[in-house]
Image (cartoon, rainbow, N blue to C red; front, side, top):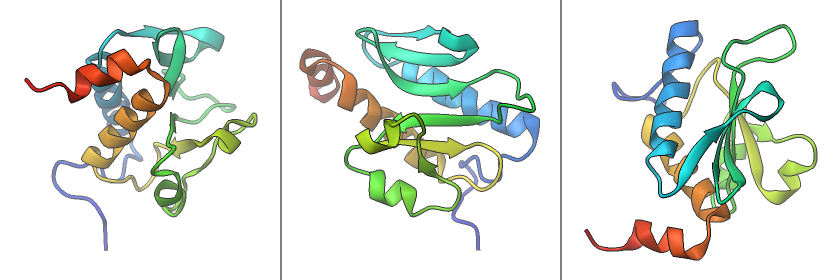
Length: 137
């Protein structure tokens, strides 16, 4: 039984599908207050206040790099890690709540992925910017 619906990325195994998921997450992240795209190490990341809150990896996978995204999940970390394929991020980031989500294979629903991007933003953005998300209107 799949845990996806018609609006979810579902099985992103094809190059077109995982690229579409990656693009959806990038566009959503760039709509959050004072965010911008950067390309350290040849990878795409989204930052707020010079801090990364979304790792999007490389545009085109290679033998060395497969498509995945990384987010910091201080609240949802346990839930994310309980899902198949999702693992703590490397380089010690996992200890700080970062998870790596492979884009090939089964994925959570789109809304869950977008919630995780927002949670990651809230974890690293200054309070004044988080307050803008919570402001009425």
